[in-house]
Image 1 (tube, rainbow, N blue to C red):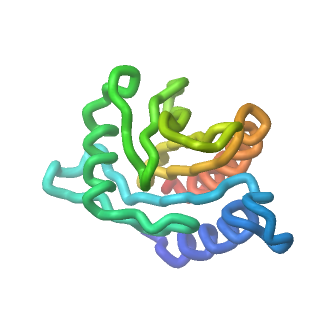
Image 2 (cartoon, rainbow, N blue to C red):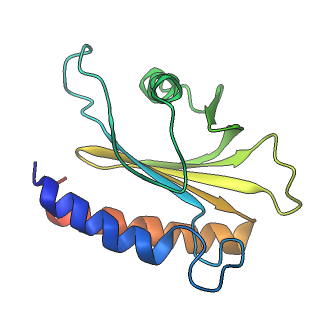
Length: 153
């Protein structure tokens, strides 16, 4: 694993796509938070997933365990998952990624999540808003995953 590449790629990507940006307005960047989790679906079950990087969120290891159990159970259409204070329900499933909407948001436009799996990681991207925001978030997620894919990560 080329950790120096992952760290540099994450730092550059997160600075351009996650958080508030220079204007200080709430979330002018595509994502409000992102989480990169080590994940090897072919590894032994005793191998725990760990948080490799995070921005805009302070993930709890116990929460992470529950989220990874949700992924491993592969019952995306029948169960919900929790990240931070929010509970999400999956709205669309694709080959190596899925989208979800927040069930308990107080924001009028809502909140969403995109979860994408690579060979070595799971990227969780959180955004505020609806369709336009989801499209911008997907572009940001795809850019980072493409960088990882170039190194088979």
